[in-house]
Image (tube, rainbow, N blue to C red):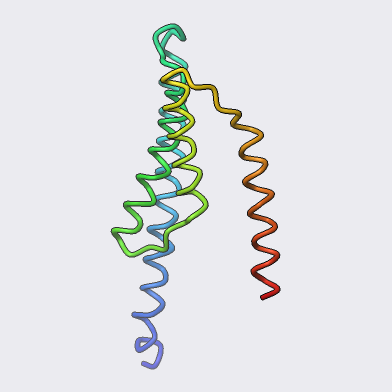
Length: 120
């Protein structure tokens, strides 16, 4: 009988893990469907940045849904989602962003910040 007293805590953790895994799987499915669908459309009909906007919206949407269900928000994927949408919209409107250099600078700054934060 003592095992049943611990069951709600274990089942709660299990429910969170199950929901997290489902959202992750859903994200991959949406990503693959979107990418495959865009490959089927002739390239001259797809606006530049469409793929990045789609990826960003998937990341932001999954984080928003997880948050609404009480899951911890992943700040890194939120930032990537915002950047993907921003770069995609920039490309859509003809603004050329140096995506790779900016991402490398951001990742380097994040590593420095995490090292500094651990020391304090």
